[in-house]
Length: 391
Image 1 (tube, one colour):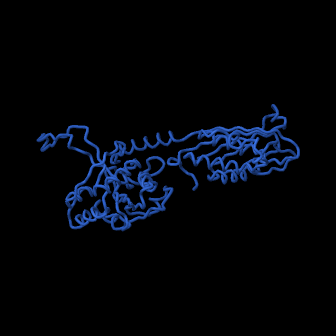
Image 2 (cartoon, rainbow, N blue to C red):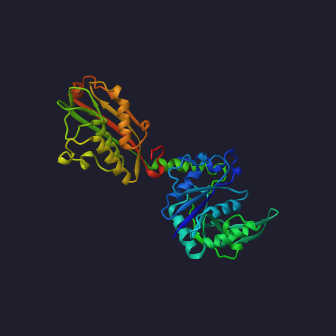
Image 3 (spheres, rainbow, N blue to C red):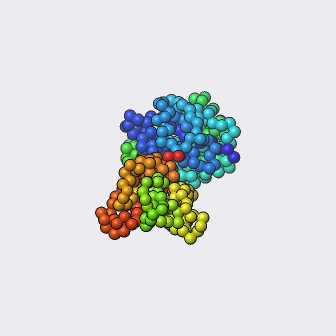
């Protein structure tokens, strides 16, 4: 079954009191529009997403999106129902179910999207809604004239879902001059029964400044919760007849690290930090020195393989900070090249890699020039919360 999703983002959001349309305001890790779009772009059952956009350069709207393969855009209209009608006309004619979602609801879940799709396919029209928890009063002139049983009161959310023929009839009615606050209202006026799907209390609509502040707090806390830190350490004795390889760069010197692979302490420490951040063990578990397969192995390739494992676990690298401890030679002239090679193996921009060279002030085996060591710290994040990763 082909499904299209229309994201209604054509409004100005003036109630928020900001010069910029509210859907373009940052709520942590991107605009609320980008959060809403990602929910549908990433959903496996949504075939395409139609963005009904406000006036303005498209680049400003899409700058913080990580994926636009399924995305098409159309200009909005003077009213919400006009904007949705434009989106409907731009949607793929083969779509059997069409969802409509407000860009100002950036916390919609994949589960709610799926349940709305299923209900729309079965019943023809469906909306997410929450039962009222409060007693509702009808008031006239400041005086209560009626008490409405709260069991019959539901608070509408989005997404709203419709079979194509139902939404076509609703849009046609709107084009003929009937006004409604949402497409469910138009579908009702067109004679269709609209089914209610249990909504989600977290699927809030951002309307006021307080809503915006709460959303920013929520995304900041969620992003922090999905980030993890790992540390790594490696040390090798230095012996004659071995190349000195650090972060994939061969440094001219008369000694090199003794090891089963190329002995690259920077890569080994970074690998351990990345694996450790995701709870995936260490380099010895995945690339044991007892296995002849890894004899003389390029440690950059081992690092890239560790990053692949990290991705399979649902994480990606944000940044890596390395300290290489070596009495001599000095490595400062090679650091830019080292950063570039590590960045390429990890799949991040070079700015996400830091390397410092230190000595051990003549203390212990490293200080006597008999060994080389490295410490690493890696920050990783769940894919949905990662910022600044190079795809």
